[in-house]
Image (cartoon, rainbow, N blue to C red; front, side):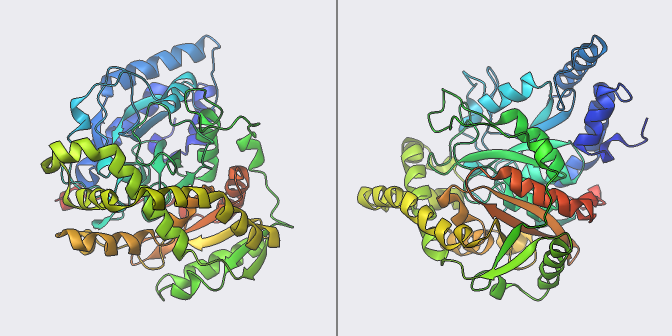
Length: 476
């Protein structure tokens, strides 16, 4: 048995649990030990369900002993962003308000992971109401980057990114409305997948923005993400936005030959803005992908600025509709930055909101024609154009500072959500001792292609295997 089970990938652990070389209980105890050692520093968890996790692990081991193996997630310890409901339990959504309630349903994605035999170890810190890209939370404390505790973890799925990087669990679910999976995964140096709008059911989870929200996995590699994704995708009659279409075998689709595949690189946006400290990592990543057989195509990309603004408009309008009563009755229970962003939605005309929604299919068609119909299979852009910022640099002390900080962090990710396209982030180097990550964007429902490209890259690089050394005594 390995001396440190927490170093195993999800895929490796899955195989060992199936063959009974490792028990689910041993893997769960390894996670709980790692959480005990690392969580005081990174503050990734808001609740740890040790007893329930051990009971679930023991049950998983019994099932396997009796020949009842449910699939690759059977017995694998996971933890999830604290916005996915479980019947009878509270989910804070990073807020004071939701923490007072007990759920009357279980989220579809949690049901599916339960059915796959996974073990839920705990629930993870997040931005309040999933409304922040930094990982800071006044109610539960800021989530910190495992690579350097003075730096942000990214958000809003902050605990997911930090917990995976710190080897506390093997995988996690996050949500993404403007970068909330891709940012924390990229900033913490792990792999995260934003799925296509409608690919994964949102039933039984806290909404942030009805027409932009999507769920997806955060894990150590594309291979691990594929195993989690397989368990959660598919039509759900309880969520009318989900599509009824065939589901690929994501694990099998990882064996993607990059020869003949074209990766588009926009020469008019994002890359001209790269800071010197991160530019070499992206050039080296593209060179490595070319070595694997991919064709690198420079192309002009439509200006993402209007898409970014439309994303903001839709986001704020829908958030105001969701939070109107609570903001009128309990404004003091919101973080300053969250309150400022949501209140702005009250001033958006209904006509502007409706027009933004009606424009989406037209703009998606035009974007597809300008990028993917020009021979580009996937689009490559950075997650951040500069290095990871510190917590001090992104602390919002007055409402007027909110938008400038958020815009700087989400410039490369937010516009993708308006189009509903899939996007995945993955580590490709380090700058100033913190991860640098790239982002791939594809046609609708091309998650298998994105994961295949990243998997090919991760077979010849080791960035995704790097593990931070966390010094608990540095926690504030």
